[in-house]
Image (cartoon, rainbow, N blue to C red; front, side):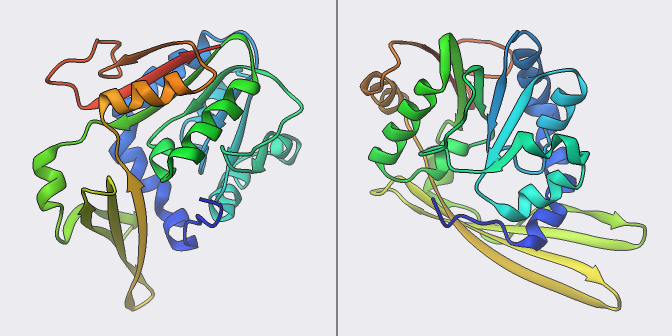
Length: 251
């Protein structure tokens, strides 16, 4: 995970694509968790600030870390210079802070970028060490759809629009699952109008998927002793209709 880096093209268009894909999914729920936290908050994988900016503007004492410099550069471009101290280029596995937090969140699949058991466990324990007593750590992963895992996606267009008037952008996604490794290799291809040309760039990243009892065993191996897993961003319990694992750990 140390070498994980979004290409600058992907960071450039990230907001447009993910405000479209994710805002109606998880934004309200995470903002509510932040709003009801009295102390400091840390967002792991803050990216370009899709959640962090709104929380900061709402008065939250929030900080962010990300391991992609290109994403941080976009985020810092939205912040006044006196707020840049809130953001640092660090990894969930070994980040350090002078602060203790009452809430740490790792939204939108951050934990799925940790491919090995030991770095997953180290990350959980590192987060634990940075929480105040009774502080909470919240992360999410998707619930694996076995049909999707087997067949994957093949050149599926998941976003198409204009990033400026008359200038189109399109993202095409392909996936290659490895069931024995519980990984999905995701290939993104961006195509966008630039001047009188159509440019394109590809990026491949692996993601680790989890099953329910695996997540429970993982958390129970960590320093956390109290946790629950929800099935959606409305606070509902897990069911056969759930699409998300939302893991809430308490110190």
